[in-house]
Length: 162
Image (cartoon, rainbow, N blue to C red; front, side, top):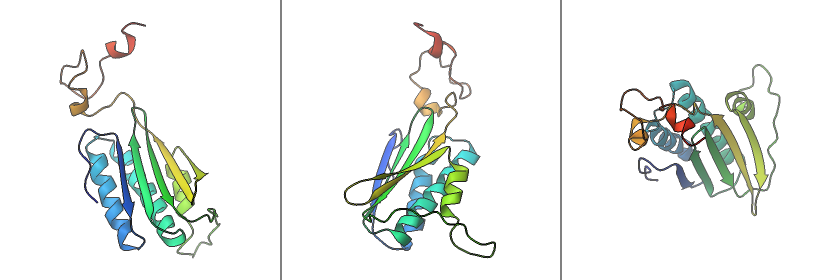
């Protein structure tokens, strides 16, 4: 896997099947998202949910595992796909169980999540709201009315021509 170029808003990789891939994938996603200057809690939640989705695919799916990260103006979407047709089965772990909390973490930390079937296998998506008025300075460089101070969009960008 290679780190995506700064400024792109869609990143994708393919992983081999194996537990060593989980940490590698998590690090790549964190590196990709850091350039977007996200609030720390959003970055941490996104990486945590991504890690849970990849862990699920590695432990219960079949390879290869593909993942895509979409960074949009007002949201972030994650997709982890594997070739297994087995559906996701949320469980209710006991208080002393060490496993079985992944999908509860996904539901708790993301704005929403869903599963799509594909041939072969499935895609598991998670979405996060992103502050729409806070953008990285490198992205704002060409925005009319942006002075280079702070990271808030000029209000005129929302009102011009409306």
